[in-house]
Image 1: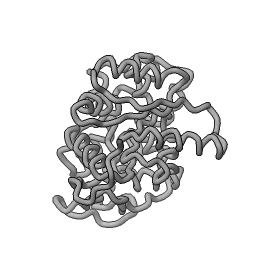
Image 2: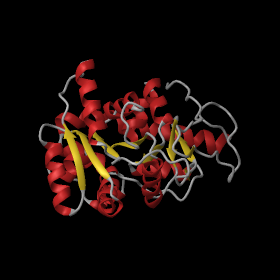
Image 3: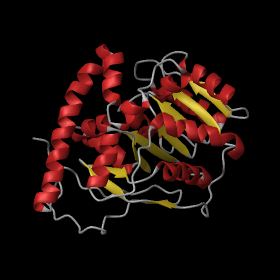
Image 4: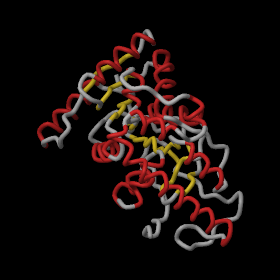
Length: 300
């Protein structure tokens, strides 16, 4: 059964690095796992965005998506560019918290901790393949359900049925594999309707862990080149996306760093606090976290 709300559950608090208008949690991988543990222990609904340059760039032109990220209880640096930016903005230590790796680790720990999992998303059959693969690798893992939604908006009746299915299964963690920005919108829209303590959007992790798609080699991941591997393996779907995102992110990031180090200003022209005075992120006690990240100026 899903854990009841627990006001005395462990707390979790970390600063956030303001990367191009998105508050990125300045965390290590171990701290990300601790955050998920704290969310589950609280018994109250949370959602976590596993975000890379794609999510940041999409949020630049989409105020709603930007707000969804900044209201999230956790925004992990999924790609090395966000790790490097967080460090250059004075936050540390910061490590990459890659969606597939986070899912693997939480899955590995789950049999001992009694966590119950639900997989929502993926192409037809992928969520079931994911459940079969992970339960085979981790004896004692409890997967309480899967659902593959159609590639179209759900009717209100269909959506209500999905919510009822998930809540009836009483998971502790709902993993969402819909890709950015669809998964972030889904989590924000279902916060409070889905009773599970945490929803985590992990996108392509479903395919990687189910074995239906290949992951980039470790050396490419460490050098921030996973986008290149994915673009070459899925050129029709991803080449255009990364041809736009990569140069735009690099240009905007360089501009933010220049404002900071040459003029001591943030994106909104405000003075940057001195080193060591980084703003604290949300304190998470099972309640909604309030994130105070200023709105970025309109991209030029």
